[in-house]
Amino acid sequence: HTQHTRMEGNSGDGVRGEVSGWRVLAVQKGLGGGKEAILRTLVREVVTPEIPEPTTDESVAEGVSVLHNAITEGSGQSGFDLLFAVSRGGKVAAQLIQKGLWTGPTLLISALGTTMCCNKPGQAIVLAHGTEDGTNPIHRVREDAETLGTKGLIELVEFDDNHSLQAINSATTFLDLLQRAHRLQKAAVAVQFHLKHGRETTPALAPEATTAPSAPAASKAVGPRYGGNPAARLALFGELTNKQTRIDS
Image (cartoon, rainbow, N blue to C red; front, side, top):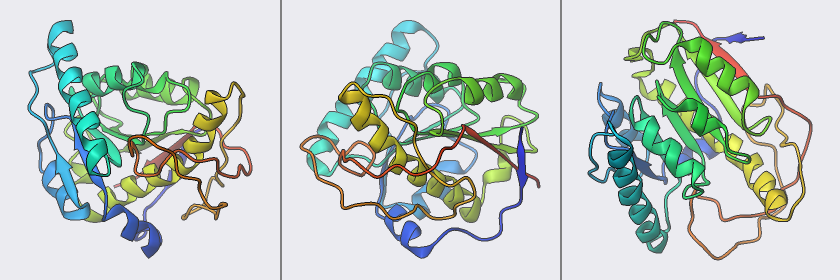
């Protein structure tokens, strides 16, 4: 069942402050429509390595290689906090996720490749998608969000708009999407810990929570920053199915 909500402002200043320090790895192809410019006003840095158009398996693979190199190099600069992809850039993001080259939070805007993106255990993904999208129809994206991945780690936010998704072109809306990714990742870290140690778990966030509940202090791990938070075992609380939210214009 799709939940209908209206956005009123944004979440707590603490989360906003953390987002403002993020380094974001953005898939270059598909960016446009003012979205990259808005993102740059909200985070510390947006890195967009040049890649070929993802029109063939070979060009997608080349793009994945370029971004993987950026992730590896980025680990020496505190890493990246978010993977960001728009439209056809989703095809490259999907391969990064499926190959296990990216395990941090991901924000997908009108993305292609959502089935492959979502079909990865332990992956935190926020999908912003228009109900009138004629390129990747909303019914497919809803099915991906409802049936794939780890329960509670995939959130679909719907807008009454088409593939261009101009409805999100405001700092307030963009910040809300970033904060959703931030909250999901807190649960994803715990899931990834359990998956790594051969145990299954269900992530936990209160469905209507506006800020992430407090958790025990995280224990740092050696390795890339991936999603901004070093791998840590966090407390689990409650149960949440993959969430769908509708934001009416």
